[in-house]
Image (cartoon, rainbow, N blue to C red; front, side):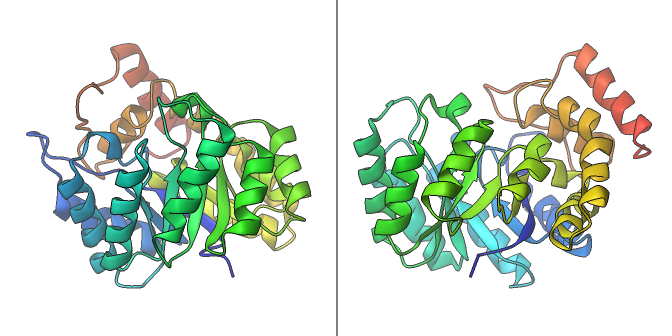
Length: 294
């Protein structure tokens, strides 16, 4: 059984003006997500600025999310690293904290071979007992997890159960589903490709959009899975301009800016991320207004 079906939010890590993690704001955001139908919390992933959290902060944020969510919906912890040893350490800590699963991004910067990727994921998964979702995002990591490698891992390692696909390559994603006989739990990693990936047998999306539109993103997936493909497609099309605005600068700068405009949390990000340009700020503000959110 999949860890979740539907829309999981790649939730931001809210921060105070001094850069400290804002745990009170995190609690509010979790409540906001649960109350609006989000199907899972994905904590300290790319959108959660894991790359600039210390290991201690990373683990503390996982603990905070698990404890506060209190089994209302699943919590999946981002525990990937370009060091296999670190990925194993963080994954073990997430399991101890009570996470329902982990999300493992492909090792970045190292540019590992396909065999290196296999060994990295297989050894990390073997160190824990909870389910693992692979995360393929070549645009950030510089390396693509090939469909044959994903299939090999899925067939060889019992607790590797799914993949978050953000390659943008629909042909590659179709090949993954072909090679795994449609049995792998497939999640869209791109908010503009939710419907195409569901049409290939996907279970849902791990979404940035859900931070500001949780109910709508949940409904997009729920409608499709219930057979209302036209209704689901209408929601996908309705929010395309908003989705594009969410990536006018590198994630999570725009989403945190939009959340600040909506008074959900502060827009603070950690260096080397910075606040958006005035041009992009105005674009985000206008897009929110055009969607009736401001």
